[in-house]
Length: 279
Image 1 (cartoon, one colour):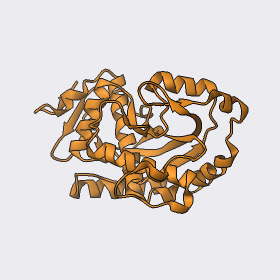
Image 2 (cartoon, helix red, strand yellow):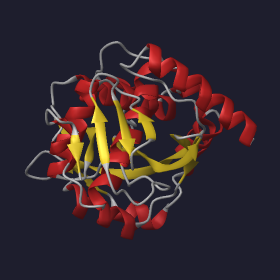
Image 3 (cartoon, one colour):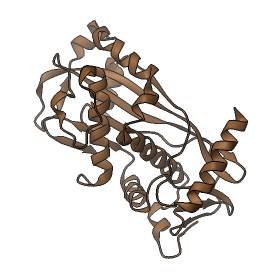
Image 4 (cartoon, helix red, strand yellow):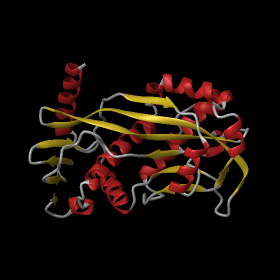
């Protein structure tokens, strides 16, 4: 397994040197079904201000060293940690900047279809990242509620994304684990946690769906759709064939990396100064 990781890292080091724009990292993405609880849904409501029945990018990366110095090379679109530990960025420099400035303002990032499109955090609501989150959410949600109609959409429309019975599905991209291989920072794995959330047919004053706590307590596993979620978790590698889902995994990686920098009290906006330096 370690030899395989080394081969992956070596291959993408070469690719990143030739094509420094966006690098698709090869690492396992593990998906799991997490039955909802009233406590967890209440916590989500408090954190996001609504029920995120879409995609959220969560958590900070594990495995980063204590950072004594950090430099961003804009030409190569890669970071240098503590002098010589390289991290080639898996998204374009433009998208990196958008995520970094959003994370600097607040940690929450994501998108959900409510009665109106809802963007969590400070992402550009009309930018490429949110467009990908919309498409990924529509594709994954359709895999759960309408699997016979699955396609990877070029344009996101929520028509067949929701359950006819009043359920929502939440995809939480996180748990990015980094390792060091021959002077390069690599991602060894990540996780997508999928939860089914029953919702009411009425909304709050802002147009956000309300959770159905009675149903949560009575039928916590939502078995009619749990089987579809489990099928998705067992074959999540197929979902990565949808480019929007693949890119969402990379956005989650970058967000986790930047939150780890932020937790070490590094100023993310300074990464894009002319010198490209942070303390």
